[in-house]
Image (cartoon, protein in one colour):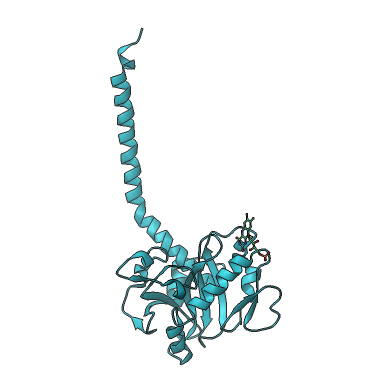
Length: 248
Ligand SMILES: Cc1cc2nc3c(=O)[nH]c(=O)nc-3n(C[C@H](O)[C@H](O)[C@H](O)COP(=O)(O)O)c2cc1C
């Protein structure tokens, strides 16, 4: 014999009530945690910029960033600094904002990114005194499995690479994922633009980098990414100004 507590109406009532309570808890947590998530995202970007700038064992990311890095925004076409908040950029989503970005024609899209922004943040690293010693450029380009996001650190001469750091990608661990391997990224230090990633050994050639073995397709993606972002279509106009001493 079924009691009143086991009626369909009561069961449904409990299910709906429970769903409602869960939905309210999840929505509340999501709204409450959003500022914290945003702050963590910014901190993560800052940590990667500091790593590209050569900082190691960073204890307080925010303080170290504030003390050593100046974030600026440039007009990609002219290479001039513009008065835009660097924090308004999200590397993944801003390029889909129709007012702040444009579609790249296939023949102009060497990095395979489909769209790019009119402006871009750049990060100036202060050396001894207040002179800028390094400029860090955000880069992105298609590997084998998806877009690889990274930073390219250039010397104040606008010609010499100081570091490359990929912080987000979909390449296979142990193959294309080796773009993150410090042993490989260390080989970039001191190389000169333009860069060519070659199969086999690059030796001491200052324009060549060893390709990743078993990951030629990712290596080609990195090669195209660097070529694109250091060209006229990328940071070329800005780098031309850096070469003329615009930073100091
Ligand atoms: C499951 C799987 C994952 C792979 N992941 C990558 C990758 O992330 N990057 C890459 O360049 N090649 C990857 N490859 C290998 C490519 O298909 C290709 O063989 C390789 O890029 C050629 O490089 P190599 O000429 O240095 O051997 C993968 C292959 C398999 C089967």
